[in-house]
Image (cartoon, rainbow, N blue to C red; front, side, top):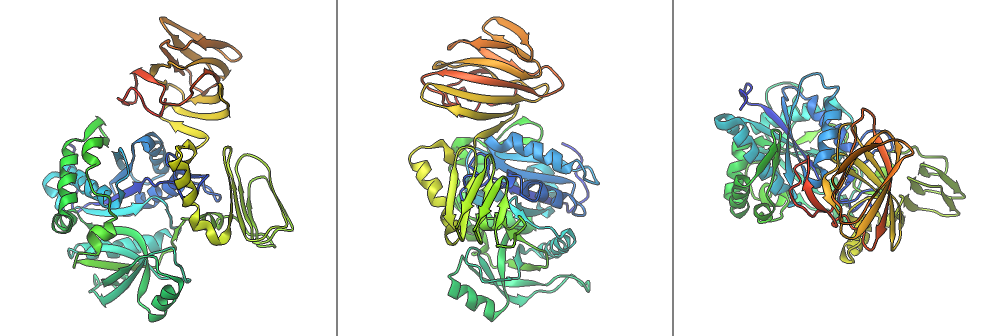
Length: 501
């Protein structure tokens, strides 16, 4: 255990998961919104990490993410911190399934108690969703400063944003009595919380804004570890007891990673932190942030990042819009043309196309629900799937044939595995491949190929210093990623059958 820093430390806790429903087909459960490349560049997750790292006094960032997203999460954290002015330590909690924000925050508090030992209760957690866009760093830092000062008075603090329009897709917070400021002339105000209002109707939102002293609920929190642990014990005893039991079952396959165990973690009730704690505590407070804030929760908000043309269209990718107005098109892999349409959302990816009226963008999740009901993997995985060793893209799939492009990062390797229901042909298009096939091990170069029979143990490795790219042609009766029997794996994926390589 390293020597603890001076206390109380400020620990950003980044919640990086999500179900990938409202931005389908671009966002999927295993590739959700925070990790997508924004039309304006970067990712929401990367921007959140960089924003947290720029705060004064931050020495450690904790990220809570889904277990399948852990490799991509770690890579993006390292990338986001590569330009940080100070050295930032990183830690990760990997959830086997989503149990909502109350469970994630409870586990983060338990992580802090173990990480900082007897000093933990004075540490301050700053909980940040990974999918919010905030560009004004100075204003954000000022709001955090006010929240930390308020948390020092044993308040559980949330952040409010002054409404700029009538909005029914957000939650609202009604503020009450003004709390004492920290004494500095430029300190932001904080208020007692009167009540939370969850996604009001248009008429209700209009009335709320007209009465004043209401804020959009930004879904960010700040509190001392000891105070939030006490709040869980008082207001969510069942969840807190289950969380403590689940923490005892965690594994640490790497020094900076805690893996939560499926059986124990699944016993935590699913609840939003707002409902489980903030609506019940008498110690809640809201800081009014002056920063810009966008919860990019729909295709309308996503395409707001694209420049508008003279007809009110926002077009991204290879798009032709003829006689079209107020239409938003996101084209990822091919030409999309619109003719004579108004007020549409069109989103195209390699394996799916969404066409929706702009008034119904919040209903996109109904599509993902139907896909999940019929067991269609397109609600869960995108056409390009990221793995710890690299990525693969499905190029073609039919009843008895599947073709992938596989890219393996330098020095990385897939697990030693075998398939019972398919054989594989590998053709190297870039780099050098080290192949294990049965008892044999050999190298193949660009324009060379090899054959992997069904039922034979095999492994693909990249021994070089540049990416390895192969085309894999699968032949057989079943091509699901669960037809894997794994014998050895460098990434600690213990289950022999998974939906990943």
